[in-house]
Length: 380
Image 1: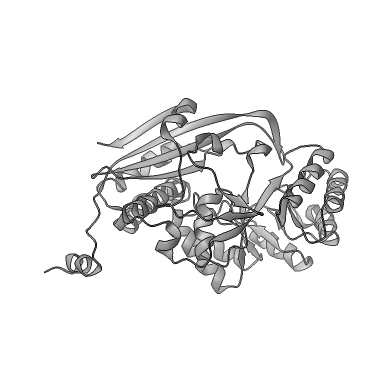
Image 2: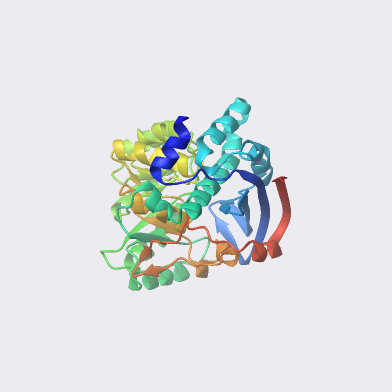
């Protein structure tokens, strides 16, 4: 008798069927009105949806931001390493995909990440367990951090902040210009005045600064106003700048939403106090768990990057996650709700963790097809 069947029998489960096909769809959803994200003018949001199919008819899902990259092509490039393997062998698939083209690993990791999420989702669906239960649950509700700004007027932003505070949200993230200190001062002072003292705010500079001298005026202002964090003052690879800035201010710096693996997070964890993990980028659920263990060991807080229902599953299992970020539908900057078949459940500013099997990714493939620019399939 071989070891694997004996283990399966002892656990009372049968080996899962293999992946027979990987489907990927690039969708574009226009915004009701153009938005400003730092220096970037935005008119739409692009998503890539992934669905894996198993030999028994089971499926697993994932979704990620395209963010100007050929994400659909990256998914189809690594898909052959997943076809023919079961979700229980997801680590073998990931290792094979990473080893195939080492020079391109950083780029391919975005495709690998979505396929890893889909494998975990399929595993949870097959076992009839939510992701948090597979990982080991610690809580069933997690604070939500809504995001405001995106080039809106000061009056609009302060109105949103006051409304969100009244609805029970306890931390709010404000997008700033980053290149206009006078405008940022006016915005942040108005935001602080619009909310009760027990509601915290953080700011997102969206990589606006190149040097410590560029960053310090706004960062010191944010510190004086009691900001909870300053996000992305520099590019993530500028971790030395992050460390130098963190040494000069008391406000925690939050970085990492585009970091691909635990090695990058290790550098950032030595420089900043809050890590921004994104399972759709950082190696999937597997990579996010690795980074969360690192954060726990190094006593760092984590605020995941968007995708609140998926990251809420991780937050249910990892107390290091302070809150989950959410761009609420009324803001208009993340219209992913138009692709979903289930909405996030929020109560008194908290995300109620889904108990549905899988990774809490409930998109409607047929509805999404109405926004599709291109669809590809690998496998039978």
